[in-house]
Image (cartoon, rainbow, N blue to C red; front, side, top):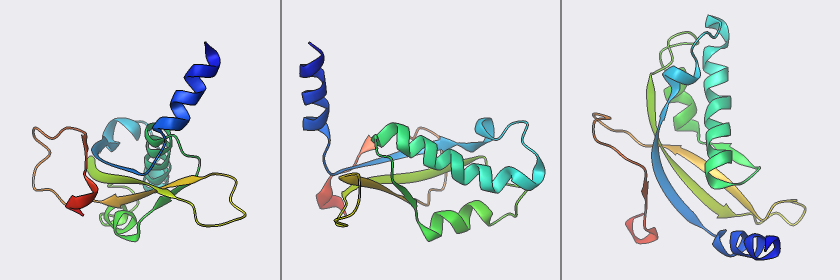
Length: 122
């Protein structure tokens, strides 16, 4: 039984793209002011690691700038991100895949849900 489950997980693992909203406000509650922006980046990486099941998570420059746009203390409450699981081309890498997290600009977060993005939409 356990062997079948492991085989199924490796079969599901492949290149995929998901777009979702991360609520940073609840993840940064009771955090010291000077640690809010660095912890937000760590929480985004932890979210991507859990959702996409990869150890290697890379944050895009635009996402980093958006998180730091209001300073170290006043991090935005929510952020819409695109999680892209890609093949790792590096031969020395221990993992076959890595996740690239990019920023998606939206006017409002109302009614948005996690969705799987097609490769043709890129």
